[in-house]
Amino acid sequence: CDLPDSLHRLPVHPLWQSPLTIPGGTRQSPINIQWRDSVYDPFLKPLKISYDPTTCLHIWNNGYSFLVEFDDSADRSIIVGGPLENQYRLKQFHFHWGAINEWGSEHTVDSKFYPAELHLVHWNAVVYPTFEEAVMEGNGLAVIGVFLKLGAHHEGLQTLVDALPAVKHKDTVIEFDVFDPSCLIPSCPDYWTYAGSLTTPPLTESVTWIIKKKPIEVDENQLEAFRMLLFTSDGEEEKRMVDNFRPLQPLMNRTVRSSFQ
Ligand SMILES: NS(=O)(=O)c1ncc[nH]1
Ligand SMILES: [Zn+2]
Image 1 (cartoon, rainbow, N blue to C red):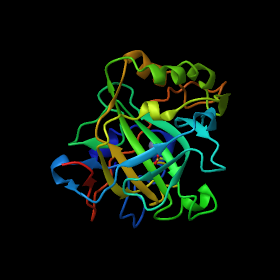
Image 2 (image 1 turned 60 degrees about the vertical axis):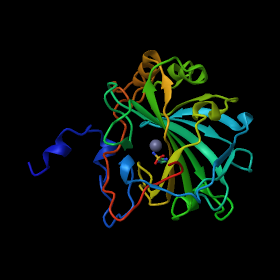
Image 3 (image 1 turned 120 degrees about the horizontal axis):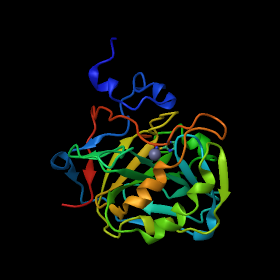
Image 4 (image 1 turned 180 degrees about the vertical axis):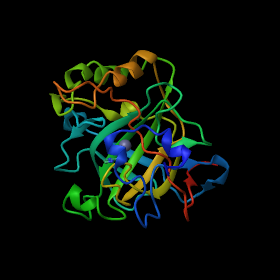
């Protein structure tokens, strides 16, 4: 078989049989963040996060992760500052995780995987009329990435974990109408930022990534709750939702900037 060995060990899930690389892609995600190669940028501003917990709508198992979706019809949950030229509206957040604690995150730091990674997806509603249009533009999206590490119980995450059994199967939804995602973001202001892409189809090169330096801690039971979700619909042969992360992509001609020295 002509696949290089590295590809053989990848999680083989239909979604990942989509193009693992985008032809002509020059700014694909995720990447390894080599701490010593990141460049401190003193002009980077602090990231300002203002979420309204009542914009939370529901949790949806879309067959490759579970998404917590928000009402983005107005500027009620937004981020501004950091590397961003405009303010961006929160649309949804979701996670990527592994079958075991040794891997699961999409980005790595000095080639270290975390057991899971949170993505808070925002879009530039100042410049673009819809999320779908913003997805196609270089400055259309901003995603905050937060690493999860095994440790103490996370109180704020638990309210989300308690709802997961109700979205066990693909295409199930549960109402979830008050949640403040800022409880999942470390208080430490330090982050890396680089120009990248969505890590799931359509893989478009439209994301300003903002990766928090500090992880949040969650406990084993909380990670196990993620692993009890299913890729499959009710009635299909069960496939556990695990290893829903994209392989690392080449850095190519990019610099990762840090907001800290
Ligand atoms: N994983 S990601 O944050 O790049 C993403 N969000 C929506 C589609 N893909
Ligand atoms: Zn993601």
